Amino acid sequence: MRLLIFGKSGQVASELGLQAAASGYDFTALSRDDVDVCDGDAIRAAIADNPCDVIINATAYTNVDGAESEQDLAHKINADAPHIMAQTAAQKQIPLLHISTDYVFRGDGDTCWSIDDPIDPPNQYGLSKAAGERLIRGTEGRNIIMRTSWVFSSHGKNFVKTILRIADANDELNIVGDQIGGPTSAVDIASALLNIAKQEHEKPYQSSTQIIHYAGAPCVSWAEFAQEIVKKAGIEVVIHAIPTTDYPTPAVRPLNSRLDSSHLAPLYGLSAPDWRIALDDCLKRITADDTA
Image 1 (spheres, rainbow, N blue to C red):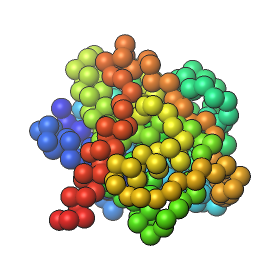
Image 2 (cartoon, one colour):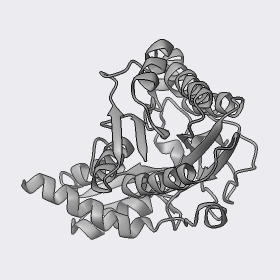
Image 3 (cartoon, rainbow, N blue to C red):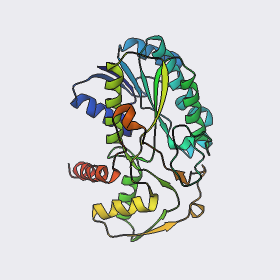
């Protein structure tokens, strides 16, 4: 199986490269320096120049607050770019796997969002990702859109690494306690994507779009997630759960980011990963990197 991965240094893209190499796949991972995803012709040329069996789009504009003031840029990267990837993949009859987000939902209530629930993003980042979904779904190709949430890893900037850094410098931390979701390891996301890519490659090509949810379990608040991080890391710090209203941000954050992943088993033989197990591995990797 030959893979073309858009993205190289992000959390999921980094793991895709590591796991694809370990599995012996023939793959090409393209960074923003390799291809300008704001340039449609550059995307088309990249696909033409790198023959493949499956395309995985692991690049995105992920600055949630920044999207409030950089709406055009967020839309180009999160909507226009994947649309062009989907169009080009369809012309070549190549499956496209695309990563989306829980932020496409309005974020209220206290039940898990299903793949069939209506989307209603609360901020510009969510709107750009929802636009990407809509454009991909309008393409006559084989598309798999994976919505995930609260991504963490030993790479780049994320909640786990932030908590470790600030916990070392403080005796007490105030962390939002009324936003609920499923932390999801980039390691698990990459593994699931490669699993799905292999299954899609091995079956006849069929033009259709499949939405899936892949999010960690059990669901927790950011404060509860932080408590588990410092506990496993052996850091003594008091975590105070605060309401979202006490931590204002430029972009509205959803209170309910729960995603229902129950459909994964019949579709791909997958299930929601336990983020607590993944967190153990993540902390080991971070420790190894710090001591290297």
